[in-house]
Length: 92
Image 1 (cartoon, one colour):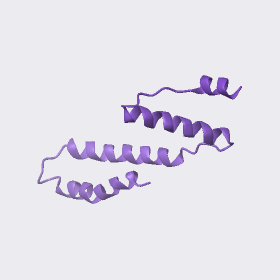
Image 2 (cartoon, one colour):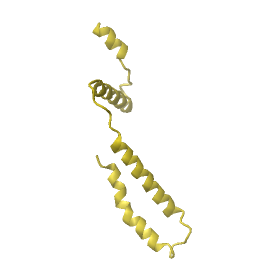
Image 3 (cartoon, rainbow, N blue to C red):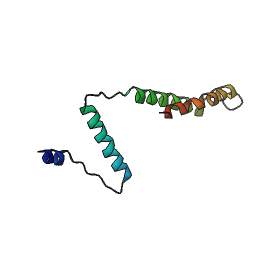
Image 4 (cartoon, rainbow, N blue to C red):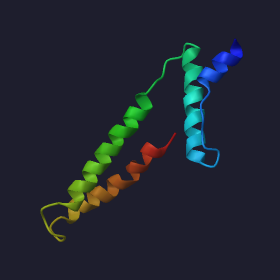
């Protein structure tokens, strides 16, 4: 009986494609962990997405700011100060 269930749940991946292998491994780990009663917590991923959107908005405003360089110097300095905080989303 276990061989029938294993064949039914068997997933195929291209062994020469490391992205395909990683995808299959991620799906398998997710299935095992959720089948044991753990819930998936997406809070950190959502926070990272929100930070990414804020950073993109800041970059778009800095790129298309309506004033030319000498007049927008203070705004650009603010964007430069905010830039290091953009790397916080990549942690963890």
